[in-house]
Image (cartoon, rainbow over all chains, first blue to last red; front, top):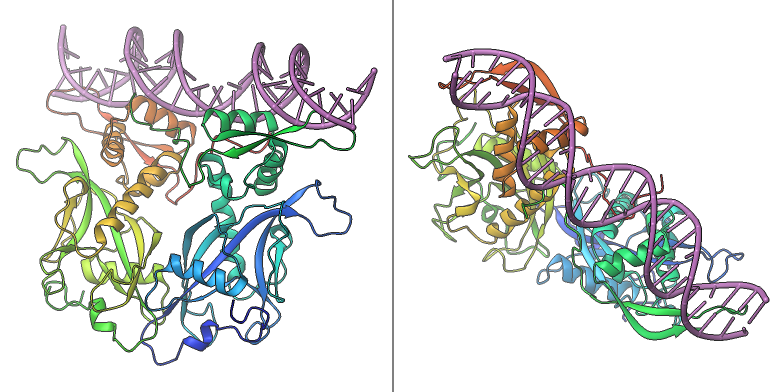
Length: 257
Length: 257
DNA sequence: ACAAAAGTGTTATTCCTACACCCATGC
DNA sequence: GCATGGGTGTAGGAATAACACTTTTGT
């Protein structure tokens, strides 16, 4: 990927916006989440996990030193979705985005100084992949726990929060968990993923039953090896549907049977 | 309002977009809904109502004769929300929009011929107002039943559909009905509004109980006069909260009590 | 034996739909 | 008296939370 390890060379929205335009230019900004263990030294690999978001650190003014969402200007021949996928691949080497959806438009006239830029915010999800090592990231790019974000650039903190709210809501009534879980998982692992995303405990038994009744769980037949102290090996499941789907209708005012 | 009854003089997105730009320009497009009786001659005033959307008929190419959503380019000093409110007021004389929210970005490179225009779609809601006469609309502008739309311009049909889906979903778990109902209403009238929006019967008793339990109904103390055949006069209610609020948490994976 | 996980069972709760029913109030 | 609507009651169903318990299968 071009320019990956040269953080100084990064096309930014300021390079494209020129002051003579009558209206705004358009950029995309993606809050890409994944669930992973905390990096803190004391944390065990199977300890509590946390929801993380991918940010890169700005080297230049404005907002130098602050952390920003990946993204940038939309080119003339692409729509915002493909622009987001392209820029995630080019700028932070992220090609395995399992789910991507718009969250909202951020358009305050002064949201970026010295330029008129309208941002289309996105929610992106990247699955855990415990087998292979984490994909290499550019030097200025890192995953940050959403509950302890560093100082963010411009209005990017609000974009992260909007995407997180969207994710939390949809975890309950859609199959969107497939985009956070690895290809094969034990129910305990899946519970940790749901717990980290929602911010509260999720009962393993009830999680199993809800997803099972909705037809979202397929046994792989394989098992995960038990820990050093023995115990029954955990069964490995996968999501039966790997594409976003609403699994649960809303309760109130449903159509007559 | 300037230019209201001169449909030929309407600033369109094509006037603003010039071919020399590096990226897209931005417009807003609002699908504004209201519930009203059908215009068909046989329909009674208290007969079945239908969900309508506000459209104006294009006079010039491209897509001359087709019906389009109100909206237009975003100016340099406004965000997309205020731009939408401004353009609804200026172009179709709509100042009493009770609810307005973004639905999504439409950005296919060829969605508008001979110009690169990214549209931010909006859902708008206008309450019934049976007391006073319907506000005057420009000559080329009219309400159309959503179930029988005329030929729509560009991708505006998709924007209407996306907004309708958003409205249907939120009617169940938010208080968004306040933005469709008149200031004071009988439960039978409110049921007709919900029925028209959802597309299926809504039981008056259950509607009352759900909204009452959620604390969304306040009796006004006044009553509506009964029909010519007598009967108890219907009590008039109003929505206790006139601002958008989520009234119902999602069912699955709720936080522990 | 012991530990860990799978899977089932059970109870209580909540919220919904559907519909019966009685009461209130005006014509 | 009669029509219309308000409001309550109730039965049934669906889904969930919380947690006990049995079974399975490794060390």
